[in-house]
Length: 605
Image (cartoon, rainbow, N blue to C red; front, top):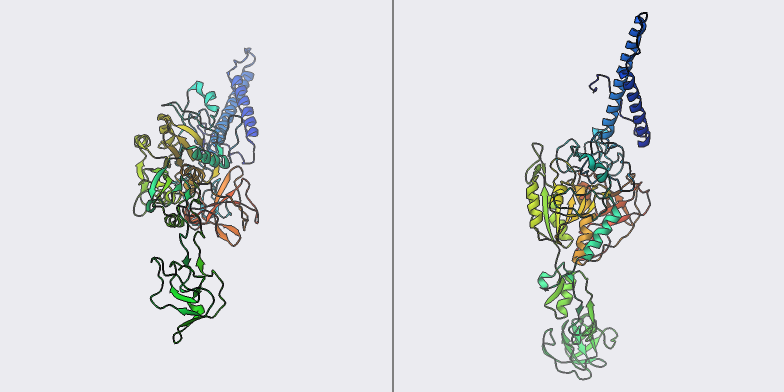
């Protein structure tokens, strides 16, 4: 590839050069170019009649210097364009709205990893990588996330929304000349957005800070309460404590099938059908008498113990009952109030209603429970390239997120509407957002700055408040969190890549929904990892893992476009920048179904 001057362009600068060194080199090149141009433009000194040869030589030298200057200028342009391709510089143009992956702040700008564009698209490719796969900043050859040759990992060249970020080509968006300095100052998270204006790009948020913010916002939401019949209360959170309405049990009952006896044996058996559960009071026993009794039946007055059927021998001839083991007074009798007394608190507010909770409430006399309503979630699936049936074809791919997100959100205790597939239609997105009365709207794809990535512009148009615009996590860094105007729903924008969307779901949506539903935060625990996990140099990584005895094992197929790893996983390991060594402890996020959510809390066992 050659520039317009016909000279070959200089090669791409080595990855180990610093941005400051390249800036100095470019400045020196520009100075030389300006000097050469000035020399070329300067008029030659007046020539005398006896200096024709000198004049010719001078003209030739000036021409040669001009050609050299043009070559140097061409080389400078080539270097600038190469730097722009890898995200180091934006030649001659500014971005009115850069992709949320950008890692700058108001105080300083953190250099992006070599191979990542301003939008987060990793444009550096290597043909020497096994299988010819792209090298991505969030997928390192040789680590558990690298599937190896023939893995089917999505190539950045494929024009589908399920790559990270959502569109692979992002044309520069120009700003007005006087706006560059203003836009270079990054807004703080939570900056309000003027209706019709471009959303200010908030500082890229650390993973822990983004998750903590989502949790705080959820907890700050006012908790409503409504009374639900027991059959509809499953998965809700108690808004009021469950207090015993009666003693449990409410009378002395038999814990086993056998014989109710009074006093020491042997005992004369009182004939008849015996005492059954659900019947009224039986006749009081006299000392030395016994009567048959069923589990759950009411203990007759004056009875001192229950002898299990297998521990007794009945002499039918003499009509006497003999115990084959020692009899202890009170054995196998459940006394009244053994479990609770009337007025005791059985369950506090904030308890998740599980099947055992329903059983306890019913036993305590409840027909309905006062609970927090389930958070309501609308799911908006974006992208013209998505198919809902059949095999991928014609450059289009199957929608993996639509079928996955609804059940996942329900397992988190949310009430989810049917996915709305909007394609790449900005007006349809605007209508869906403004019409939603849900607590949370989840969008898939469209969070970058490509030609059909409409999430940011539409949020700006409707006056949304941008709270998180990009998170320092791989995969999933283009995720966002916003709040619609006038107390409208929260919006979590997920990247289009499936595993990146899972990262956004667990980073922002899960803690937000827990707070809105009144659920406690997920318990944090840190088992050791069985093998080394390579980390991103600057960002947190979320890696699918499985539990093996008292440790966790990283899984392969953890690229941002892959679901094979997470489908077999028990949880996600939170890998800090730089990675972790074998045997080091790592934080784990439980997947909802592996910890039996929403019915129970806790770690893997």
